[in-house]
Length: 281
Image (cartoon, rainbow, N blue to C red):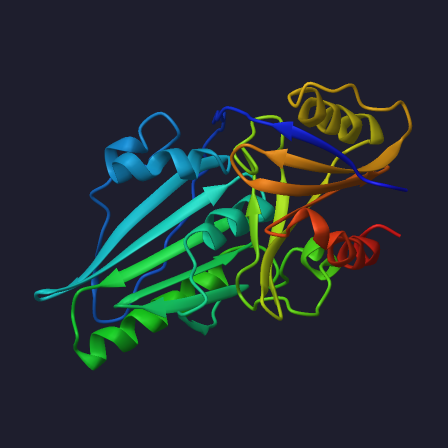
């Protein structure tokens, strides 16, 4: 099947609706726990993280519990963000992760960076930080991280969709989940993304799994129609789009799966086909 070439430009939009749930935070030996914060919800999250709240809300944020652990002047701050499901928790976690961080346990995946320990497990994204450089305080923060991870429900498996991405050239710890506005388009939602380096070429692969073939078809049609063209009636197809924001986009869809590749030139369809054929059989 040959690619067809079109152009597209889009707008941005973020929306989300959630509810809250109570949890019990663990004690930390030798430290006094203080809970002087309310349980934050989608309506007041801006009061705590201001401009960053929109990103959390885009991943179906439900509630946030905050506590401080004090020992003299030493303070360890704990933030437990609850999201709709484990994919959303992975999404917000991966949006703040860098491959240069020091990756460790606990939880499903976590890292340390500049006095912070961040990890996700199940439906939760956990952030622990201290400004103290004392070894005992840093060790206490690690202990707290382990205890919180043990307390939280959920397993320690990364989203199964990540295993679909081809291995060749895949950049480690750069996989993400984008819930809204994939590639900046409001009609593209729910994409796992992996970055690749193959020889001189750097590119990204997006996999969007929908609930039904009809939903995938609607998504693709919206993308194509915004380029001013009418898609074919067949249940699948290949296209090359010249996206006004993202350059050349290779798009392939079949059944309930849509695959997008950005970062390659139009004359590199052979590379796009090589990766797409490993995802869509």
